[in-house]
Image (cartoon, rainbow, N blue to C red; front, side):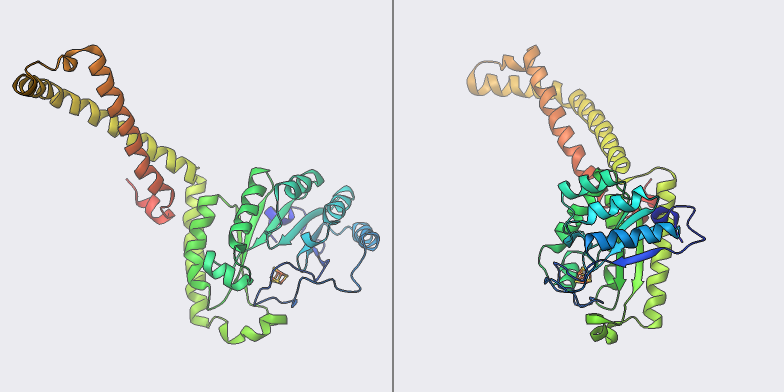
Amino acid sequence: MDSLRYGSETHKRPVVVWNMTRRCNLKCIHCYSNSRDIPYKNELTTDEGKKLISDLAYFRSPVILFSGGEPLMRGDLPELVEFAVDRGMRAVISTNGTLLTREIVTLLKKTGISYVGVSLDGMEKTHDRFRGVEGAFDMTIKGIRTCLEEGIKVGVRLTMNRKNFSDIPAIFNLIEKENIPRACFYHLVYSGRGSKLIEEDLSHGESRQVIDCIMERTREIGVLRAIGATPKIIYNLFVAEGMIVSVFSIFLGLLLSWPLSIVASKFFGNLMLEVALRFSFSKIGFVITLTTTLIFGWIASRIPAQKAVSVSTREALAYE
Ligand code: SF4
């Protein structure tokens, strides 16, 4: 059992998953609960949910995982999370992430929620195809960022199959870039709409390939994070390096070219205009030249720095 999601003292008693609603705003092709955006009968009310939580707390269940369907389709989720936290339980949710608006995340933060697990099926095209809703990927990533900004622990969860396993290296790049602290990889569950995807499940060989990739990338990210090399730090390093190189280049360029340009401008000025271009000798001329070159140098140093943000861990570790 992992401590990031469930805490460190949860090894003796069971974690309870409550699928609090079957309703969902997405239409995933692999949905194990065959969920749709319609009301379902016989789901527990808020009061009944509180009774359930009280019973679980009485039995000292350490963690309750609110799942679904999409738990955020229920307006009473924050209230129920707070109720569980007040009774000494750790509360975590499993969500598709599309409804994690700033307002709801701020509210959840106040309840004392411990962790938010967000489902991701691949990069944009793959994810949207699986989720059956265009734009779902963008909404989910926005939700993850909002959780991170509000200081809520967040992780991604991916159900692997033949149609998305080639996206896994890109998912690791995303995890690094967004500084997401946790990722879970699951096998397909053969129930609900997922039962129609049995032939899309990974073979043993493909599973082996994916697990090797997961282990390797996890080790690499671990090394980077152990030395504190977040994408932001890598970005800053590249900017600093770019700036130093630019400044030296500018001074070297000035040293070599300025006298030449003065001679040239004087020569051509005399030749063509019959006046020396006095501006080249003036202080203001020098300041303008220096300022312009510094601005161009600064802009130029940003280009490799921007590229550095998208480098993979492998490339970053090989960087000298
Ligand atoms: S898999 Fe999850 S997000 Fe997708 S439709 Fe089912 S409940 Fe909704």
